[in-house]
Amino acid sequence: MESKVNKKSQAERLFFVDKKTIKEISVSMGLSVKTVGKYLRSHPDYIIEKARRQSSKRNHRKSYQRNWMEQKRTTGRLGCNEIEKAILKSQHHRDVATLSHERIY
Image (cartoon, rainbow, N blue to C red; front, top):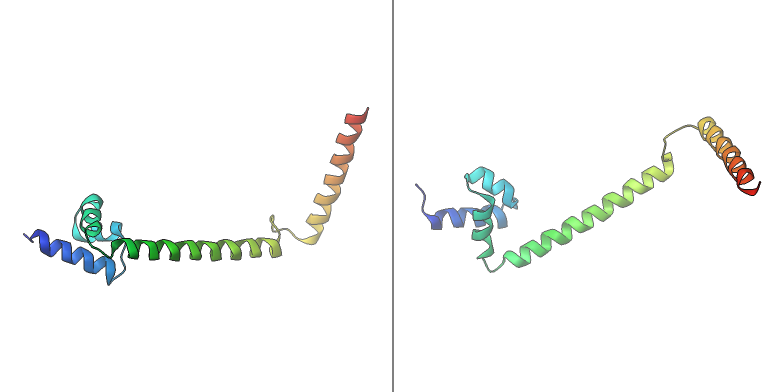
């Protein structure tokens, strides 16, 4: 059986060098997520690495959202062709007119 120090150093190597997540480390080492987190929180560079990963995730998410919205704007939310768009638009105008008429009278 490995000693606690060996497991701790292995977890730190996987986290800081191999850039694995705590969940991936726990699965590969056969330890609980709580134990791996405890090992890593005792390392002085853990907070810095965690902040760096959060910043990276945040930037990746912003980029993903920007690309997703750009794609939806160009293809249209429904992804329909010009004829379907014209039909939907005319139906919308008829519905608005009907509702407006009902509200006035």
